Every structure is written in structure tokens, then in C-alpha cells.
Image 1 (cartoon, rainbow, N blue to C red):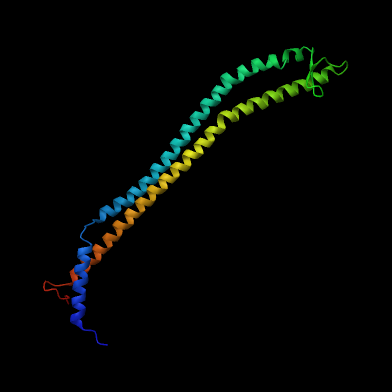
Image 2 (image 1 turned 30 degrees about the horizontal axis):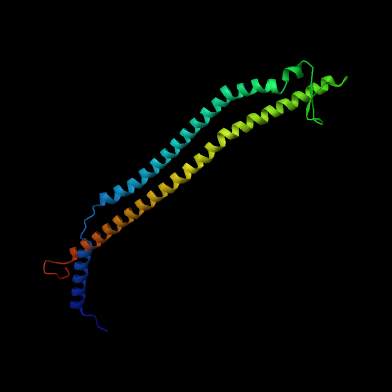
Length: 195
């Protein structure tokens, strides 16, 4: 099969013309670079936003821990010293009976051991209450922080995806323009392929 040179020239001219019509938009290379730079800047903003989330939730946690340490624990211990009869235990008046689940008088000869056991029960109970309150104050913040991070990551993923699509589209248009300009550069003023 013999390929007609004139036919190839005509197809080449029509192809160049159709590319010209399809690629009417002009995209300077700087726009593609700018879109790429915006993508990089989005990553910087994302890291900054993540640091802001960390900072904000750390501050909220610290506020709650300050409340716990400076207000709740002192108030709790003041009340628990009384309701837990710590002064009576320290004076040797009563001890805690595990079997009766109540305060009772100490057994002769075992007073010191029972007092130490009672203080141990008292301190473990106080620590459990304090740690329970700490978890009650902090765990909701941890959950909320995780939710905010997840939602922010999803939003930034969408932004990255959109920017990548725009950058790819601009890059594609730029490449088409470059090919079109190259093809048009091969034609002379009469529409013939320049030798």
C-alpha cells in the first residue's frame, strides 16, 4: 500500500487545525508550576493545621488536668477523709472490715496491721476515684480530637485530590499546546511541511 504524501500533508494540517480548535485555551507554563506549588503549600497548611489541633487539644487537656489537680481532687479528698473516716482510722478508733464491708473496731493485737490494711484500702479507693474522674475528663477530649483529625484529614485529602486533578489537567493542556506549536512550526506559510 502506497501512502500518498499529499494525503499525509492534508491529514497533518487537519490534525493541527483540530488540535488548535481543541486547545484554544492558552496555559502558560507558570500556571502549571503555580498549581504544583499550591499543592506543596496545601501540605504545609495541613501540617500547620495538624499542629494547631494538637496545640488546642493539649491546652484543653491541660485545663481539665489543672481543674482536676487544683479543684476536684482537693474537694474530693476533703470529703473522702471524712466519709472514709481516715482520721478515725489514723487514731486507731476503727478499721475497715472486708467481710462486713463496714468500719468496725480493731481486733486486739492486730490493730496496727488492720490500720495499715484500712489505709491501703482507703488510698486505693481514692486513687481509683481520682483516675476515674481523670478518664471522665480526658477521654471525651481524646475522642473529639481523633474525630477532628479524621475529618480534617478527609477534607485535606479532597483538597489534594482536587488540586492534583487541576494540575494534571493544566499540564495536559500545556503539553497539547506544545505539540500543537511544534506541529505548526513544521508548516510553512502555504500549509506545506517545511523541509
